[in-house]
Length: 190
Image (tube, rainbow, N blue to C red; front, side, top):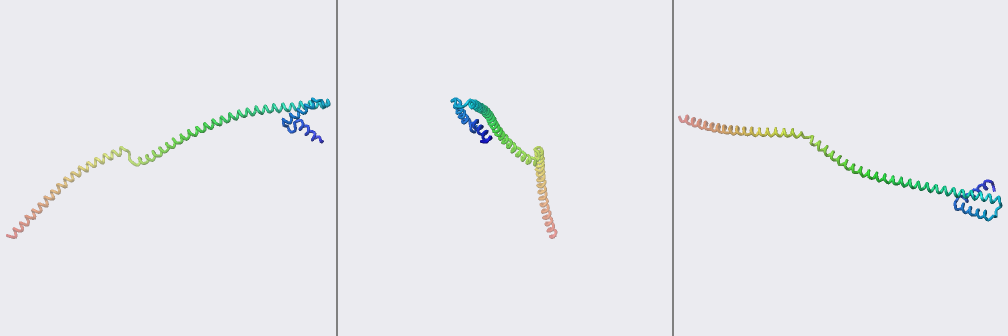
């Protein structure tokens, strides 16, 4: 066996053929049985004793390492649970915010629609004059209408008068014609 192979063999033997705890413990039990039976020489017994102490140290180290890992895993689990609960509360808060924002959005859309309607109505209203000006125009028009009614009445009276005068004139002309004809007839007979 080469020196490298011996080192590897010792390592595998000391570590329990690959570092498995079960193999290491089984190896320790076998070594302990050999050591207690007294079948080893004094030098081998001391080496075996040192090997058992080394293996026990490795087992204790593995156990303490496992304990530390378990404690670390427990702390990590606690931290993950805190983070998970924080994330859950943040998600709930975000969902609440989203629902609040949806309500605000709906209200803003309603307000926007009302403003658009208001602007459209304002444009239509601005096409027409203000109420006071319209009232003044209406009262002016009513006054003009009443003036026109009076004027119509006056003109109607004047027209009636003129009709009567014209009728009288026509009657006078007829009478004058009749008189002229009777004068012509009287002059012809003379």
